[in-house]
Image: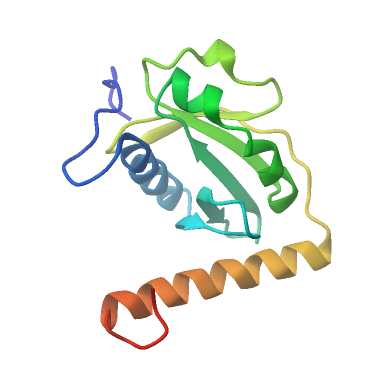
Length: 156
């Protein structure tokens, strides 16, 4: 990550949250994690970034673009049952003292990120891991299909 990251100003065509997710995904790729964005584990929840590690570990990263974004979020605790580790990703200007203890912390911008604090490990049960990895795979495959054939019937 750059020495003095700037606040997460949105990159052209992206929201501030998507800009953070981009940097997070780049950093996790360098750690050999595959990532998907905006995955829905169950109706009513949408994960900003889900990452699948080289040993099958599942991480969830919730990107927060500012204090108001964090204060308005009432769903993040619902993501805990869908991952082995949970992180918040924020920019350099975010007041990190607002973030709950025990959650991971990633400092990000649109180009890279840095893990400042690992989230507490809470391994998924085998059946939940299988279901989560299957959702991850389907989500990734459907995204790829949509890129190759955006007009394909059944894709939205």
